[in-house]
Length: 473
Ligand SMILES: [Zn+2]
Image (cartoon, rainbow, N blue to C red; front, top):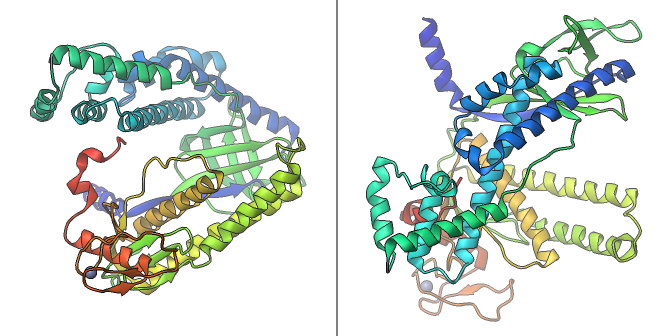
């Protein structure tokens, strides 16, 4: 029976989505207790740096997955005893550091990936080979460690075909390409180190929610945290009576005498039985989302972004680098407020789109992975656009909506009715799309959204057509 329940639970868990929630301490934490917390955080920082130093390099790459080796070695290292750090803090610190190392490797791989794509000296076959060995498990690690490449059995045939595409002396050719990879890794892999000691994580066994007395002697709800002293737990009153489980992240704010607790909760994916439509969308810098049904969501998006941008420029001129004066607090507060307002607006408009369009599937163009250009104005917008896609993807997951990326090339220059290619030259963004072939006229963004829908529906989906173009991880 219990087994059956567990299975049912596991199945249910698949339909859940993880979300971070925050809790706050209610009264100023005594200096003594804050010292204890800071001591824990400092020890965790030591653990973190130890892990960075020992496992952050090329030699340890194969130990990172799945991580048991690191855990065992860390247990054997004696560091925990030396620091007198309870296991409930020690292992989360180890795993946090490991996660950071893995993140750095993912960044390194992605950066090399981009560098390869942008390098004109490589032939398409060479690029193909390099992308292949970065992605396929076992290849990258061995190359970086200077060992012979080991391809998993099921990929052996693919590997042969990739290699056979290389011209000339293959062995020499592969050697050169592998050496290029090693150089790139050495160039891009940084030594990791942290000076941050205001943050640590605790396992469930290390805390307990409950009632106790605050400093004034009143009964209140709070959390008991394990300390380095035997059987001594710190009690911290909280502003709410929520109780969470699993690992908690604790952020210390010693100057305020407060802490913030970050817990993960799993909330159910909302099921919308009435969401049955398939919709194409087009993202824009001015109108945030235009749908294939002809509706616009986030029509204030561009104006709000420009307002923030102008405010930044204005303030930078007066107080920024050029004048040498530090930015004013008032300015920072106002800018943060504006950005917060924009973020709320973005979220609200995405929700509104879901409620009105009722989509089961959304098709959208794949965004460029590595936007070029160093124009500040451009980058600022790209950042907000990044926020839009990130929120869109997250909200789609939360609402059980499938989001499918389609190839973006020519999306706005193709006629969504007859498929003719109509380049728009010298047109401004207010001008409609006009087809030279069939005479179809439509708002440019709506035409693009319709193309996204067409491409999605006819299976011209990026992940199916161009699997090798996807970046690793
Ligand atoms: Zn046409």
